[in-house]
Image 1 (cartoon, rainbow, N blue to C red):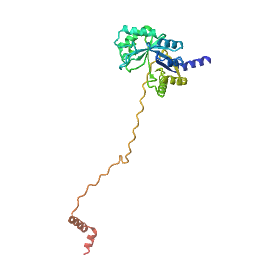
Image 2 (image 1 turned 135 degrees about the vertical axis):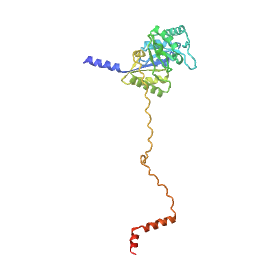
Image 3 (image 1 turned 60 degrees about the vertical axis):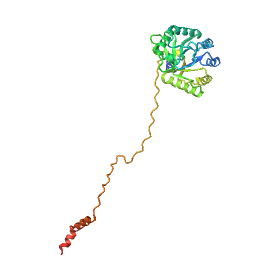
Image 4 (image 1 turned 120 degrees about the vertical axis):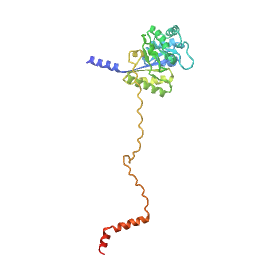
Length: 297
């Protein structure tokens, strides 16, 4: 009986929806970041390697049981100020290897990497192939932040041992707490529907408050996991079904639909008076009554 119950519990655990949450941009705001580190240790952190508190926060996160990623700056398509040592598609393999090596030194205990910005870099197949060849030496996984739809990260990892997983939800593009709650709920529903989902947020005060409120109330069928626990999960992405088309208001029924239309009688030309009198006279003369009276005389 005990063995059967144990098997049932293991089966339920295996079928539970898995939700991974990664908090990016660690290393700049220790006050908010320390609040994140008070959360369940399945919450993972991604540390900017050139941030002033990078080493300190990576070490503290590891000590408290959180998974650590390198949040590596990569070139975006938009023009904006860039972090030092931002990866560019045109960089040589040697330059990319140097930047990643320095990042690994600055972010101890990292087991994976994800991109900070990067729409230009991650959409470049040659550029990402150089990145994956370097990551292959460190036995890192790559979490694609999906800052652009046509990311080449998965294709670039072909031929290497690097496993690629993908972000499904950004929690705090809008830092309004109601919007963050909505995105958190969306991440939970995606995990329940697809079996797993990855959400990315940032150590904003509003994000921290929402996580503090909502994490204790996760549905019973959803389990918090680290991103590395999803490396062997199928990357199921079911398209969102479009809303059903709204039914057009029915046209008013025509009560005469299908009824044959009676043709109007053609107008009759008027008959001259003299011709009418002649017709009447002939009609009277030919009547039976008049003939009988005539036979008496």
